Image (cartoon, rainbow, N blue to C red; front, side):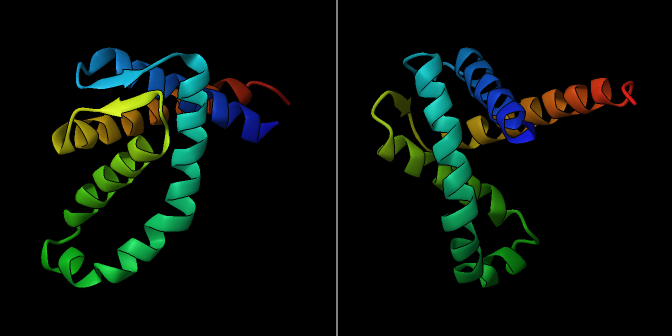
Length: 118
């Protein structure tokens, strides 16, 4: 049940980011759901490999290169999902930041509402 809730919250975060950012296009809620799933899979499977391969650049930039990796993961999802379009690298970077922020707030709100229950 927790996984479904996180998936719904990430889908909402993708929709909010697409609404806020003019350089991002999502065809609809079903596409946003697919983007959320694929982005999650890419972040679990591909991202750790890329982080290990780019470890010197990440250390040299004091971790700021991780923002570049996040943007590249979004661009990979753009390439994989037909109803999802990103206008360029900077839009992908902004999209990853907005999705992270909105997702964090939504997860915090969802966790806060569960604390009231026994």
